[in-house]
Image (cartoon, rainbow, N blue to C red; front, side, top):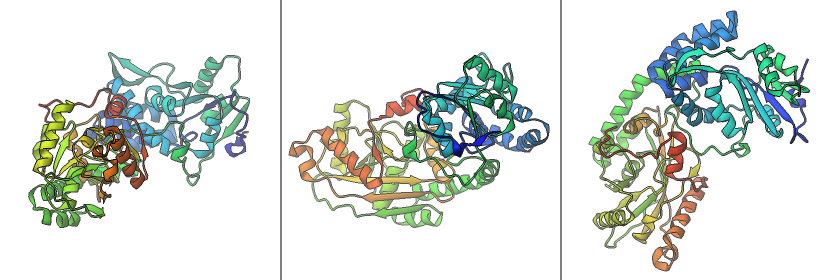
Length: 487
């Protein structure tokens, strides 16, 4: 009845409208289970996610032998019942976009973005998918299943007219466009056919796991920030593996943590290596015989950056921090000093620390997981001319060692829970004298120069985003941890 999407022309559609399904069409995965698992884990708890995994065979039976709507009803109830609607929307904005972008179907995506007016009709809860669709795909309208919300909490039930499938999709599209016909329709299964018949042109997106992915450079909006603990898309088998690994990972992380805290530097490095932590060091830090210590300026990937730098150097190095929990300070094997965000007071404090020895600072003020560097604070450039840029890059497989919404004191634990986490550290050349403040450069010029130097060495891109921008987007706050907060 319909041509494959590969037959759809892309030119001349700037003023045309497109209506597309989501699962199996815009994204390659025909199952929405991984996204409900992410919602259950990130907006709920690991226990809720485990319950969802246990009932997943039942949902599969419902999908295959009863009805797709019944399977979705069960997924929605287990994943969302009792959650705050605001948390569901926040996870939809902060966590899901990364996984949706990595799962985009390249052929369907090219057709979708070639059209000037874009609409998505999906059986998934609108509250869950709308933030991603509107922010990253510039969608004009989202027709999805509406959740029942009472006093700000999801009941786990759906509001009328129910799960948007089959003829309900047809009626929703008909109500939106009226007598006008959308120009292009994209779908992939019989429940999409009713709304596809309403359109002037309709194309089927075939299931093809080898179709490839959409390159980062093709995104309509770059993915700079994202949150969540899980670093891998949790299909049922992957989720099962994560839960089986979890107790082993906790014990392994505690052993690695104890080795890093309790052992001397000469023993800590070989011990954590034996425990599966990979550390790759490139370059040699320069010798310095002046009256002050070396100022190491690092890119910021996790809370453990200064500790891994200290391990690579084989000697203690003090670190200044922007906002960490009291528990993290207590457990830290190196000296940490909080910045007050008073420029004069912080400058005096950092100068005093440099007179006592070497100092490490992460001018971004917060971590960034993607290949971008945030704007550098310029205060460090005014303190000394002996500045050594250091690239830090962390690689994980199961869990992210950073968070914007959760307990920050658990960041090191989650990073060390990965089977074989890896840190790449590279010492770059000392800042040239002619690029320092004493040579007439402003502190902003020095900071921008070092940011670009680190970005070029890492293969990253420089941005003007700040700590405030990150936390405003991912958590709806400024990311400040109160002085008396232990977690």
